[in-house]
Image (cartoon, rainbow, N blue to C red):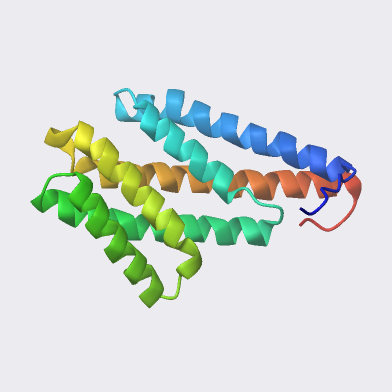
Length: 177
């Protein structure tokens, strides 16, 4: 078993951790308090959770990696959105849908050369179908809602990363990551 080596934390590491937490809280507050005002209806906990997950997923060590992670999240979610929307317009959610759409999503991601994003596509498909199974009368809405949640989360995550990185390095006097 390899030995775990502890690393010393830098000012950048501490700022990064704080910035990620701020990103999560901003996304939470946006989804919990601002979006309901804009939509004139409450937002469910899955929407808040999904947006926060998307924001944290997109928040990476560098601005380039953050942007790349955001693109990965959006592509994977869009593939899942398209598959689930078509399926749920025709059939109900359940184990058969989960089985079939994860296979189709995996193969589609392979064909378009995004093998690293297969897991994201499968996770998104699972969330959409499991939530849709609990709300069969509005099942077709779940892919649309999760796509919107993802877009909001990624936008907040990438934006917060860019702002935080620029501010930190402006204070320190180095190039932003």
